[in-house]
Image (cartoon, rainbow, N blue to C red; front, side, top):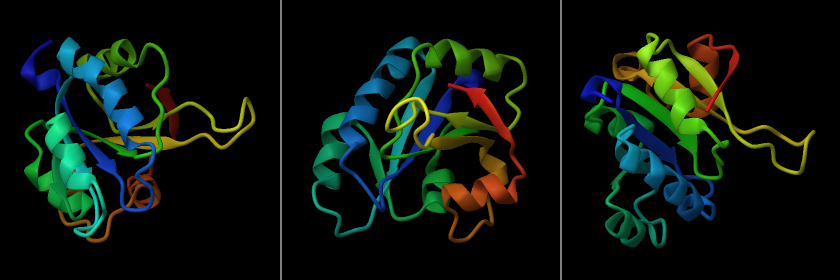
Length: 153
């Protein structure tokens, strides 16, 4: 996989950070495989344990999604909530999407509460599309970018 096919992953942990270690563990496989270049965590400055977790996992902490996007080293950003769980085959699926042109997309995760539970989502976008979006969150990014649910991940 080339550097152009790599992702910077931004994890929004401002509201909920309990699931963060599990998501970071899943992303480790993507780093080993060459898909994940960097992990950035969005958290409040006073959020307990974030600095220690970032140090342990080699991630960087930032106060906003926009700040994390500005610090990203990859052109493609995968923005996820901290409670997100990746589906089996996510590395192949996202890697294939990137090599086919990397159009912005909604990435769906495993449903919470069984088959008909709430399906968490993340957003895959080019870094440049995040610039100038003050106060960005996942719901707003999905709406502002006009992304339809596309099952990737």
